[in-house]
Amino acid sequence: MTSQSDNPVQQTDPTVTHGSAAKDVKDYLVEHPDFFEQHPEVLSLISLKHDSGSATSLLERQIQALRKDNDELQNNIKNLIEIAHDNEILERKSHQIARSLVEIEYTKDIVRDIYKLLVSEFPLLQVRILLQNTATHYELDEDNHVSDQEKTTELYQFILVDNNHECVFLGEQTAAQLFAHDSEIKSAVAIPLRDRNNFGILILASSDEKRFYQGMGTLFLEYLADLLSAKLKQLLKS
Image 1: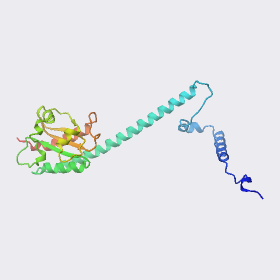
Image 2 (image 1 turned 135 degrees about the vertical axis):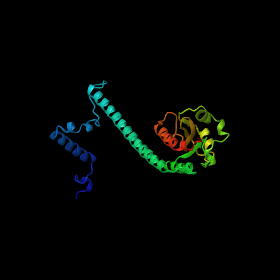
Image 3 (image 1 turned 180 degrees about the vertical axis):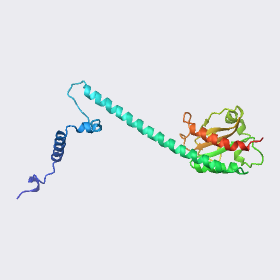
Image 4 (image 1 turned 90 degrees about the horizontal axis):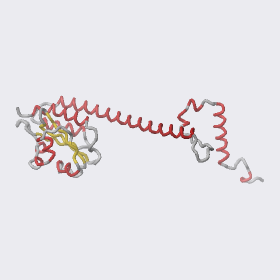
């Protein structure tokens, strides 16, 4: 009687399967010598060792360099795709905001209507619109006026007094003061609203400390401010 351990057919030796697979691969490559020419990307994933002592062979150096270049190229392509995707989203959002602003009528509640639009377009952000020198027949909420305390800040001085047109990135402490009702504010940006001179400030704030930071791209923010400025400048006193 033959035991299970004596039956070579029932034994499970992993080297048998591995050896069979290796032979299949070898036979296939022999039959298809142009395989790596047709599929060069496979070659870049293969590790080749050369008996050249302590020195690295020229071929191995070339393969390593090609593999590094390929990884860098893949990363660059990935980054470009992400940037293109983000730009597409911003372009669609800009188009939607522009269309919506055109449809908003000049009533006494126009600032409230614009605020609601921005909140709906940026649901993850806190929004504030500060204005000065507006005509009295437009009703502004208290949140749209620059308080006496805020008039003493560097932000007010920089944008509304010195008339600088650059975006101002705000740290956590300064941002929290502008949104006292929300203690979760970690970063913010202030963008001037301007006609011939600055007449207001758009402030966007986030609970993410990395959402707004010095050095980030501001093209979309400036475009958004230009759209709002074109609409809101009609509110200024004659």
